[in-house]
Image (tube, rainbow, N blue to C red; front, side, top):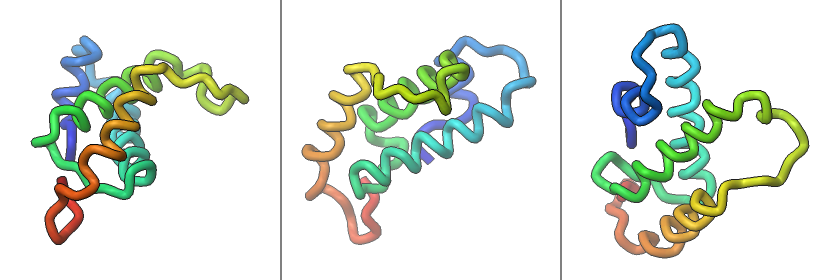
Length: 99
């Protein structure tokens, strides 16, 4: 796991439990998105992967009405971080593929 529910709730400044199930789904989706996009399994020790996931989760959470609509808009910082994670860590994984 790259980020925990508590970390995401702190990042989003959410202090209630009503959205915990949604946030957990977004956490899992962000981590899977990162793995699918880079082919690398990251863990919580990679600060850039952690920032990527929290930023992507925040974007999805704060723009829920946009999910499912036809749009190609991605925040430039998310694309930039994803590019770095894709090309900067490819050779640093251990035998399990975890970075």
